[in-house]
Image (cartoon, rainbow, N blue to C red):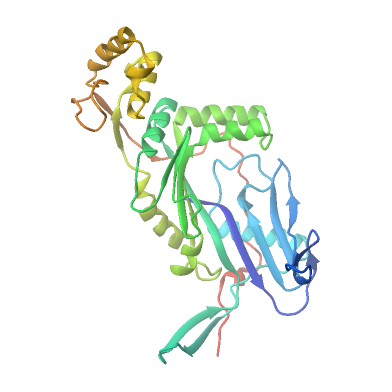
Length: 353
């Protein structure tokens, strides 16, 4: 498992460098000034990479895919510790105070019922969002396509599933936690088409390698979940803590999957099969002759398109797609080592009396 995008902030003591891209004024209905907000700087690196950074003199804010910064891609990325070191190295280069663990503060207060509530707080940096990801191999580009098509039909509890041509999302838009799984080779192609990724020989080679692996990526975007589960504080959360939650949450997406073996169908009959399982009224779309021609062909595989889906199904010929973590990088992959932040105390909570 590795880290992709993050959002983290900390309020420091004293006065520090102001780093922003201007000011946004918020007016009320009468046109009177209510408040002002500093805009984050889009801090750009090589390979069309950037992260958002802001400092109002006290509060420092960073957001983006830090591990991808100054790299051509993020097919593989860094763990939490390396990500934290990269962030502080960037901040140091901009003369902005680095993130620290701060110290633990204990508070007590009474609620409306008069009960005394003990609360633990921290003066250090806090994560408000962390995206955890893992690559998996399905064995081939076709198996990846089939696996992801099946993923679009998974209904995990109360979370809403949304199927896309190259993947699926669960709980999309949730401020608590959301998951998604997608075809990494197709994602790279999309980024190339949009101009966000160079169309270099290196990227072409990487796309080819991802296709050969049948690579799919599982990504879990933790937001308010972090504070709820004690994972929000810079000096308290570890990579292993996040990985424990990730391994439990990814179970809805990652498992060996038994599906109808569409590889045995020609493209024409495969289209009919997918239309059928998507609820298309084939009798209205096809001539009678074509409908029964396709029905007779699909019956050989146990699929009767004359029967309403999910009412009755004959035994079908299936294949099992085995999915396993894709841990090894190709020999040509570019991923420089990250030196630990020179002040190791940034991850240690300050001692309190």
